[in-house]
Amino acid sequence: MRDERLKNDEKYMQRCLHLARCGEVGAAPNPMVGAVVVHNGRIIGEGFHRRCGGPHAEVNAIASVHDPSLLPDSTIYVSLEPCAHFGKTPPCADLIIEKGIKRIVVGCRDSFDKVDGLGIQKLRDAGREVTVGVLEQECLDLNRRFFTFHTKKRPYITLKWAQSADGFIARKGERTTLSTSTTMTLVHRLRALNDAILVGGQTVVVDNPSLTVREWTGKNPLRIVVDTRASLKEMEGLRSFDTEAETLVWTNWNLDALMEELYHRGVQRLLVEGGATTLRRFLKAGLWDEARIETASVELGGGIAAPMLSAARLVKKRSFGSNTVYTYRPVRTK
Image (cartoon, rainbow, N blue to C red; front, side):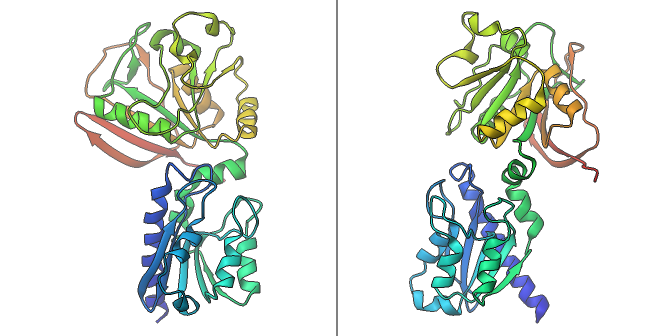
């Protein structure tokens, strides 16, 4: 009986995760959350957190139930601990208690200091049965950027580069395109999912990138240009300094200070696009949480060598025509 109950809990939590991902763009900087209301083995309501400042997943799920009289005999599943504080919306834990829902299944605790176990405790203090940790790792992974920001006090950092089949990212002194039209569209999607994008000064001069979202729907990220000579902004024709997005000029390689600045600015997700020297500085400092490496089928025969990852594990591999995109995460040592 217990195994059957766990199996059902995992099934409905999987649905919560599926719903949560629908808020991938709109929910930020809040976490992605999905919720499902189940009565006698049947889903009678579901919802997700659509946008920051809007109703939370639990609110949307409960509001979608056509017959509220069923709620006291129902179970609500939610991928993240219900909030217990007044923010832009009232506490979800209070709503669950008010509606008389007796059983709550939570994917993982919320490490945000205004929640962090308080929602679970409030529900238990009200005499409700609370189960915590169903598909916990999947729920934690879904909001790894949010958790990194609140626990490490810095953005979640994604390193990105494209390299040739023989391990070079560009020919020296010239702009080199290795991405396909499809993978370039995916790069713009990645930019839309990040709050800031960082490049070094040499990349600005050689590639003259816009660093904006043009082939995907979304807000342009904050552009960060590391310019140790503080001279690039005065040069004409550099697209990284146009009016399409805000640009922050950082004039030194004190990455700890930069992380502190970005944390205070509320930047949860940072994309580092290069070049090679910039990427290596982040790798050397151990400041990375994910690496997206696109490998093309062409060979350059020489040029600027691509950075090398160490203590990394492959988490995803996808092919797009002749190019393959690999996603790695670091192997953390305790």
